Image 1 (cartoon, helix red, strand yellow):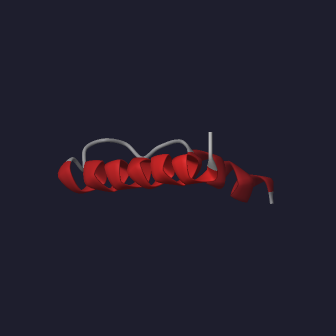
Image 2 (cartoon, helix red, strand yellow):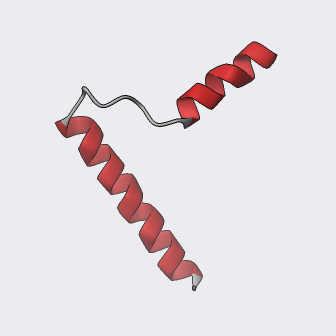
Image 3 (cartoon, helix red, strand yellow):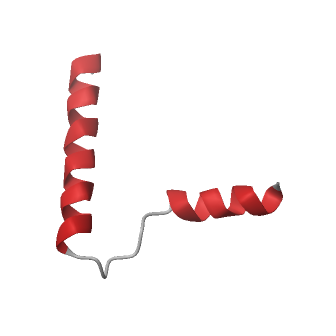
Length: 43
């Protein structure tokens, strides 16, 4: 895969996630936030 393809897929995913967040607020946030909280606890 070329870098252009990867960046295009990433942009598509980000756009999809942002649309999902705006359209349905009842969906829980993805995992990164949970791991971020765990990192805070470790500090």
